Amino acid sequence: MAKLERTIRGNLEDILHTIDRELLEGSISASYEDGSDYTADGVRCAVRVYERYSYSGGNRVSMSITLFGKDDLWHLCAITSGGSQATFFKINTWGEEAFLEKLSDIVNRL
View 1 (cartoon, rainbow, N blue to C red):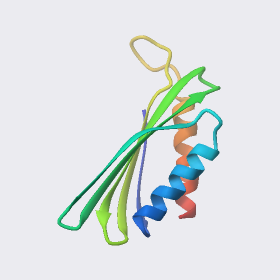
View 2 (cartoon, rainbow, N blue to C red):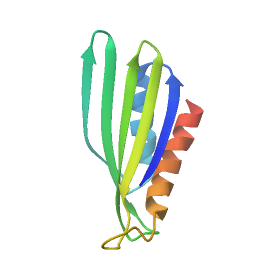
View 3 (cartoon, helix red, strand yellow):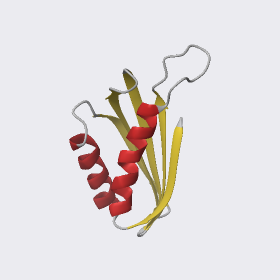
View 4 (cartoon, rainbow, N blue to C red):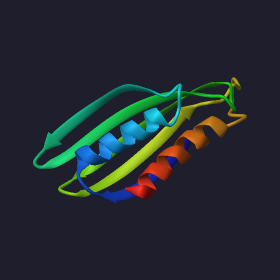
């Protein structure tokens, strides 16, 4: 498992569109799995789940992204999962780290 947390300023729809477009265009095997949006008292929460094949790890890796906040201030938390071939412990996290690094590059440009 690898995790990324950041504070982002901007329009939520624009942020989500940019993340979605760049993650899916950045990997031939990347897919959007599902998502959810919730609003209460002006506070919004958007959750997105992506998956892709990790060539370096030889397996599939998923990434959950949550954006939480209001107006133009958002807390982003992204957590990757999968990517290990061991039964009782993780022996490699290359695919997880590479997937998260892709998101980090996108977020740094926002």
